[in-house]
Length: 344
Image: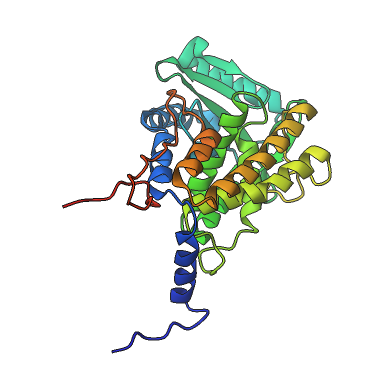
């Protein structure tokens, strides 16, 4: 019996095109899977869960906060599941829908600081926009951010003593939707680009949130899983993300088009970085995109892996994130997965 025809435009057709495209690329499936496991938070995830739950329990038991309608929620990269090893901070967003309109933001921070000092003593530090609680046993801290309603958004204390609009919960929702649209490929690729920023720039600003927001905007121009033009592997998704992000970072550095807050479209993202730092990451990202594309299309798994190894650097434990597969002996084609042939 002959095989049924594949109709152009059907899901099967899209999968076949992706498979054909992937066969000609150094997709290194196993290496990318292992790389993602090496940048997972590990035990930090357990410590973060314990720390934020403990702080939220302390807040939930305070009479004034209960009167103000306290609803504490987890936000930040840990909440969006894009944290990479190590997790150094966890953010707790404290929604106060019944907060009096005349409440001074710095007085509000003082109240939170005093409340938490009763439980944690000198482990508490009041900052311009939040109150920090150190957990030295975990080498981690929890940032507590009080917020008041502002129409459909929220306002938090700003560094100038006033209020600043924000909506971190909305960004979490948008990130989840983006991940679903791309068949759960968005989150792992964001982890990879955050790791790339760390490999390229270390502790130099701008930080991981900057490249995450750039990745969010870049994914709007990447065909999703329903399209036959969508990337066919983690390697291709990662490469395309670098390519789509590069002009976004360049435009931001040049002042042509500033990076905007996805949750508040008319709000420019505040980036604590010098012009030199912005120029440098734009330069390095453009080169990383070129290098990744050359590696992906090289057809040589060892050469490609060496490039990806350099772009992903080391995790916080000092271990290489990406491994170069063992070269296959003469007579055996290099395997895309990086695995050796199985005999017997």
